[in-house]
Length: 124
Image (cartoon, rainbow, N blue to C red; front, side):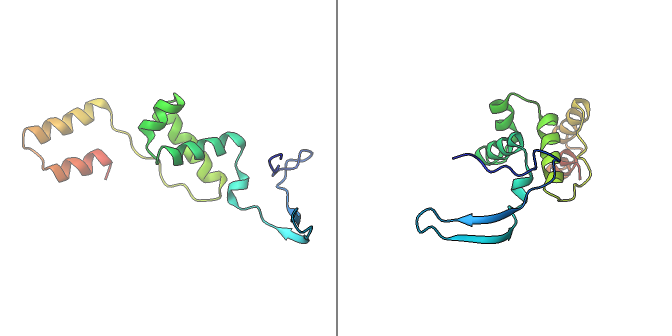
């Protein structure tokens, strides 16, 4: 069986399903049916979502499996979120290696608490 195409090959607009058919009893139902948000994704985006689920949302596992960096993974996820029609929050602020080391040094030297270190490392 061929996968369902979701965009018009002529103009690129979203296609609408107008007929459903049961091969067992030969029943056909006609109307206008939505394919759902996931049908908006390209085959590459579907593969990404499948990998995301298989890796339980853990980017470090996805980095190893797909061989791409965290910023690339994050960018692709943001693209998928937008494609699905959800709002995208502000980009997470990534700490530099120097900032991360300074926070960990402050923690080791007792200048900040573990809770403060976690908040700083998480970008809160």
